[in-house]
Image 1: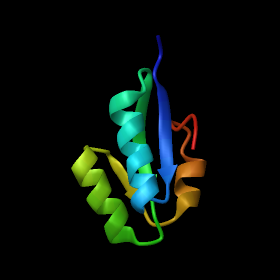
Image 2: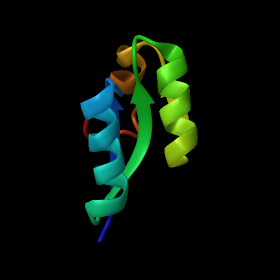
Image 3: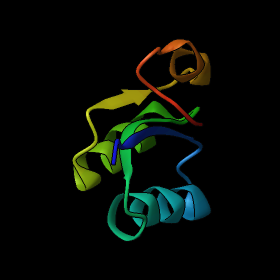
Image 4: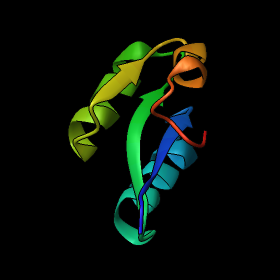
Length: 70
């Protein structure tokens, strides 16, 4: 089964939980990127969850051809 690459926009309290659940609880998904208006929050969550891409601008995730769902 091919993995679905996911991007998460907004990694506040709930968004961080969504990213964590997608990474650890949903088979067949890979969280490829996160974005948050607070860039430091995006970087922190990406570091904690070992996610490769952390952005301030959500549009970067929308334009990324490797991301299947946001």
